Length: 123
Image (cartoon, rainbow, N blue to C red; front, side, top):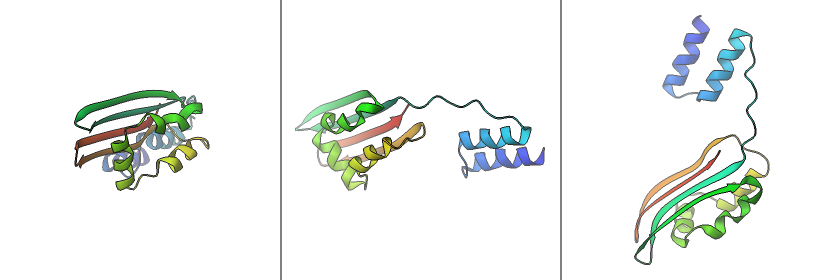
């Protein structure tokens, strides 16, 4: 019982994630969680301004087509990612190796043309 409490405290403190906590609790109970199906979609949301007009991009791409995401992004979003230290090409290359489900990148920045919000996640 004490171990379960410790796992929940670690989760509350943010030192482990929900999935890791579930795995640890299952291990303590002697059961194995059912494997989750592999993530299948790359979900991209961009809200920005480019040349004085609002731009919204909402993409749900199969992971097999993730390399195409860059062609859908506004130039301001690409520049913002670069300024925030996000290498989009490297990130997309990692998708081929398999990544866990969840947020990969979340950026909110104030740029010259206005606010930019970018969310990239695997679902």
